[in-house]
Length: 433
Picture 1 (cartoon, rainbow, N blue to C red):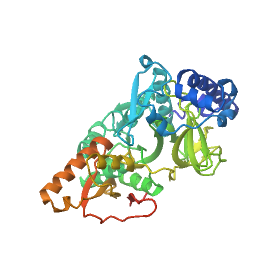
Picture 2: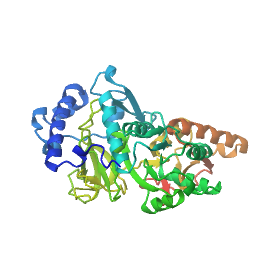
Picture 3: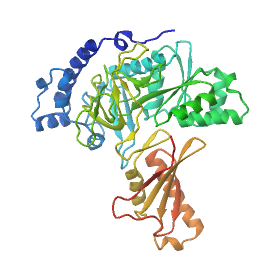
């Protein structure tokens, strides 16, 4: 069985990796300065010229990039190549309906596929495997990210996408899939559904699960492994940088190797923005030294993690990131979809509702359920039950269209939600991960 997909990088010396990173950073900075007006302006503001960047050690001279910068330059203002050089566009949700848009050249797609193929190979996937992909396809990066990586690794991709669990189980049995890719919460739900159908998971050829797009615990890993009779691996990505394949677990499962020849990582203090040493938790920052279309500079992910250069017994020398502890902003991840409270507020206000609301997130049958409590106005309080149900349905439809995820809407009595003199408590997350 093939152990490495690109051994010349995955087992390279630190000196060689630093040389690759330095060369690619220098090239990237010139690309940004010459082709992205946003970055030229940012560099000029601090008096930085491309020639000032001579190695990867100079990365701290560069300014940070945040998600709002992508929204402010919506849709294509951050791209460094002409539109006729793009072969694909992905996008993720935005706070007020505007999405963060990501473009890829042919080379970008090939490098992303290679990174994901590295991940699959590290987890034991071979060219003989059938990979059942239950991540969503479309503008979301999950489905196509795994799909191209599977093909790059020589395996067979089965693009099932998400939903219709009975059909998922039928296809798992009929096609004899060896690998399942989806969110960890959906994997739990599939496991429970298999049990309810009276199917012994040992009867299925499944042996590997590759799960990401939402936070999950070691306890949840053990539950998934038990319910599906597989070995479950963690994979990391984010749409602005690239989807799944930015980082991945190997057989040792004690951290995720980062494809640092394409995605250079830093850990910073989210308050002071100063770099932090190995093993210290802080905010994860990525610089896209291997991307042409959207070469983000020091992009703040808001994920709280740590990195370590300790040797891994798998033989890979790639730096590892530890499982993220949480986020430094207020973003929720519901079934793999990014949801911001400000998005919810935008929909509520757009429909003329009172600005008093609360988001309650629970995990029921291992699936995320989001409920939005919205205060009625005094005039609405006297409306008929049927009228209120119609309003709830209208809001729910608008939430689905804006957020891309279903929300249960519940209208509550006027002045019944808690008030605060400080920051309002908008989100109650009851999930235990």
